[in-house]
Amino acid sequence: MSVMSFEYKVEGGDFTRAGYASSQVKKMLKQLGVEAVIIKRVVVCLYEAEVNIVAHAYHGVIYISLSSDSINMRLVDEGPGIPDIPRAMQKGFSTASHEVREMGFGAGMGLPNIKDNADIFNINSEVGKGTVLEITINLTHKAA
Amino acid sequence: MEKQFFHHALKIVEDACIGCSLCMRVCPTEALRIKDGKAHLIEDRCVDCGECYRKCPVHAIIIEQDDINRIFEYKHRVALVPAVIHGQFEKEVSMNEISTILKSMGFTWIYEAEHGAGVLKPAIEKLIADPDSPKPLISTYCPAVVRLIQVKFPSLTKNFAYVKAPLEMSAYYCRRVLRDMGYHNSEIGVFYVTPCAAKIAAVKAPVGDESSQITGVINMDLLFNRISKTLRNKAEYLSAEQSAVTLSPASMLWSLTNGEAVNIKGNSMAIDGMNNVIDFLEKLENDEITNVDFLELRACDEGCAGGVLLSSNRFLVAERLRNKAKNIISANPRSKGDSTPPIEAYFDYLMGKVKIMDEIKPRSMYSFSDDLEEAMKMMQKSRHLMCFLPGTDCGMCGAPGCQTLAEDIARHRANVSDCVFIRQTMEEKGKLHPDTSIRIMKKIWGNQNFEKNCFKKGAENESN
Image (cartoon, rainbow over all chains, first blue to last red; front, top):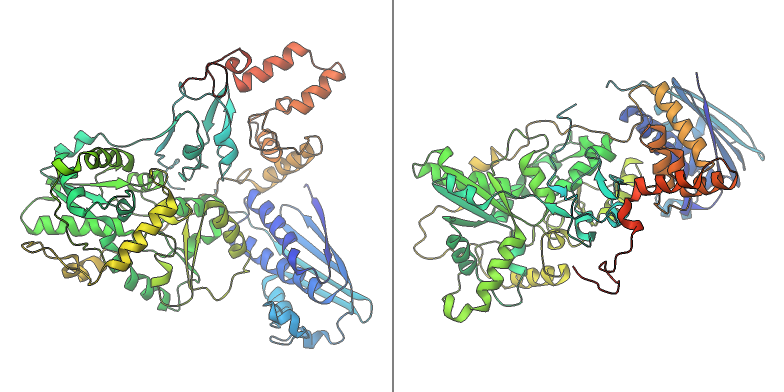
């Protein structure tokens, strides 16, 4: 079974380019003929996670690994880390600055939303160092 | 899947095509290739937006219309004209004059297509008010946009507002009025004077709709020429009598950009221009767009004022229509002696017809294969090929860009040696004979481009 790997760099604070990785991945999944509802889940997860890095971290890397049964997305950032993960997982909780909220981000739905859309979801964080998010979504292929 | 192909109104006339590739370079869905010196259409990808038609320097792309004589197969011959006709001429042309001209061509009843827009506002607002309907609802008004979403944004097909076009509603009305007068449906022909190719395609093969109420189409340029000629001889030919405008201001402007969106309650947005629409749909698909209830999307800049079959400048057309709409004082001032019941009298009947009954299905045409493992192999191949292709998008391979060529090769529809950069490298290394190289070039661009021709545009004896 073939596996394809991709890497995308994400710069903290650069909202102008937020969403690049999710757009690229979306385009690829469409070309692969993955079912629209699944693409949507992948894009929602990846976009939220990508914006999280932009909004909170200094910089990060997104590692995508794609096989014919699943897509695995690892988002590794260097940043302040998350001191209280259970709280960050609550809907509506956000530490986003006023500035970030002004731009329409930071509603506190990011992490819970990612978890809802993922088949496998793991989060590890070290305060003062950074966060690693791992999201896996199974790909079922659409009927011809 | 539905029928294998869309019906296309756009056709390439091979004998006229000079293989200049301008069409290929403007196609927003990468549906054109150059082969044997001629443009070729990948039918599954074409959405009938007409950008190629606009660009073709030699009129080798045509828009098929019905034979005007077909109207005489019907006892009653209705012509539905789009409101943009009112913006085509610098001089004031009344509906009476337009009617006179169309009647001289054999039509028996001339009616503006946008009258039917009256039922759409309540129908769309009803859909928006339904908490179960997806948001934003996307207008199905522009058929090129509907097809674009089907082929390129399949996940958004569920967002369509399932209401028919104003022109269909007007056709239902006209047929109903004539039936009430005792005519049989088969005696009634309803013909639409179309401002674009996409509307033709929508009439010939409606997406998700059982069948169109429209019998046939006539291209706007034909009517434009007739009216222009008449206007030249206006004084002696037509009476100066001006008929009142019977369109409401909202219906008059419905086909322009923001014609729908301003009328729909809730958060509505209007976007025009094929590339703007594509950019916005990308964002919508990424869930980046929130708090929008209704999206009006139009393939042409300035909406139907920019229709490919219109002859006047789109901004002038839009401006003239806006001025006309401003001057409409009371809604529906019907001419005296007109005993035809107005469209408003059939409101309930039309509301019963307004819904598109069949599902508008996605028709994704960009996936490599129906088998994921196979598709992945092809994608890997295409990505690997991109390591070697120059990334200049020069188009000399006959495809609009390097990535498209790479994908075509992965699909076994093109060869690596189609790339001029690769060929030059191979020649340099002695792996390709120059004769073979030139043969490949001629295979793509045809022999004609290698021969001296002083009649071509810009050359010494330029002639068309």
